Image (cartoon, rainbow, N blue to C red; front, side):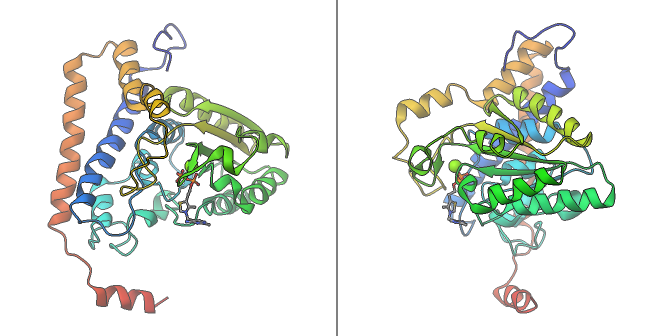
Length: 328
Ligand SMILES: Cc1ncc(C[n+]2csc(CCOP(=O)(O)OP(=O)(O)O)c2C)c(N)n1
Ligand SMILES: [Mg+2]
């Protein structure tokens, strides 16, 4: 994020604060969530979004009420940036009935259709056709809503990636495909799974406006997404955005990520998206350090309150879960 951007086009304090708040909230949720996982309180997998916060933060800040998002298995950050209730998210992770899916879904299935969050998804790449379907429905309804699907480098090798984007293109849908290229699908390096690692070119090949952005720069992501959403509402969609980034740890909490070269990891950590959001807010808005600290404290308290709320909520029973499954 260019901290020197000043003058008429300078981002507002409100925007800078929103970006920082969101990025920091994701950072706290993931860091503290990992601790809960390590205490054995969360079952199943937990795929941390640490290091990738700039993408969800910038994208969601550029959308408006009535728009839609579809997420991935690494979806906590998308939910938070979309404005999800942290209490209900933590409760879902802890299998409590107060969670988003009554505790039946867990980390990879948090969804809130009523608010346009089509959900996290345990099937890599599955959010792309889902998002295109929502965008088609919105076009048929005459709505100006934009649908964003968050995908991934691994997801881009799923057959439905091009099939869906191609349909979105011939139908001029208000659809934005955000590809979070973190260079790995589990331990498989992107160079091992595709010859051309610039994934935005796949959109160009089928006539889709496509861009590449530094995913660790929340403000750059925001500006690109803002422009993409405007174009989509003008009937100029779909648009593909490839955001380059890097995870701060292995694929999931129990993956030590030894295959990630330490110098490369250090170089990406030096471009930490949360630090950059904080630096932009500090340098461009004139906010006092004490005010930043107060924001951080407020967000940490929100997480602690969510844990307290969740601990006091009732855990679903195996019998209830079995009855729920049998009903479908
Ligand atoms: C269709 C499908 N294939 C394989 C898997 C197993 N799997 C879960 S996550 C993952 C890697 C995903 O990598 P990427 O798409 O780049 O997303 P990232 O984990 O980097 O966010 C795989 C292969 C799956 N869940 N779904
Ligand atoms: Mg990946």
